[in-house]
Image (cartoon, rainbow, N blue to C red; front, side, top):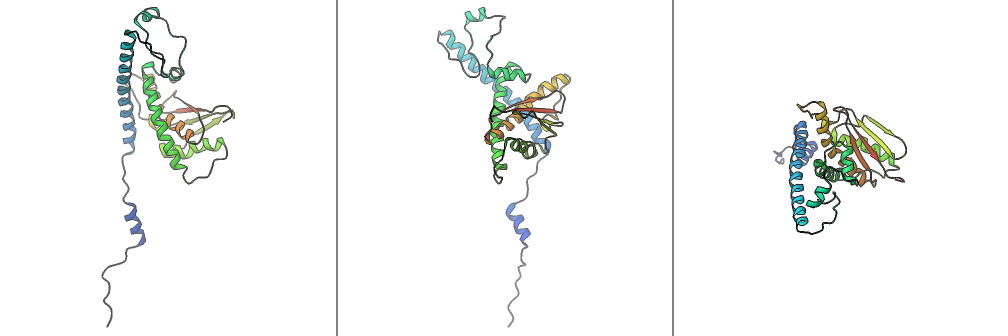
Length: 243
């Protein structure tokens, strides 16, 4: 008596792998760009509201005669008498945070927004770097780390590699992207200068991503974006002496 033939057909191994991995979830590539634009606008409004609340509380304390210690984000609000004495005069001691914002061509009111965008970027960059370096060996020198940023990190975040890399071999590296994706869709009806001013805000988050990735690699760097013509963007990475 012959055994009854099996009615089930064997499933190829390729189909099993496809079932285990699941179908990929695809989204429009432009959706992330527009999401970033809305993110910056939302954080601007949120930062302005938070700053207004802090200034209101500080002013209430000053009016009550209480002394406020200087915060890292800047000096406290002057009292009513000090306001009259300091009217028309600029404080000679500019904080490092405000100085960095002025280098980017940003207004003082955008400083809280810059701090929040940079903090978010650093968090994202550190996590992406850790994931990309999971199966890699140790880097031999600083230049290899910078090349990793120019190739692997750039391709992961912005779908291409850096167009140009320059260095003075003294701890300063210049990364140039001739068509930087986060600012490629920035425009303004007020003209090109206003478009460039807005684009500088959207370059803060990528600068934070670069800085966070370098920090995860053990390099405490200063990353400054520079935009003169759209959609080109240049990032100056400055390492401390002896890094």
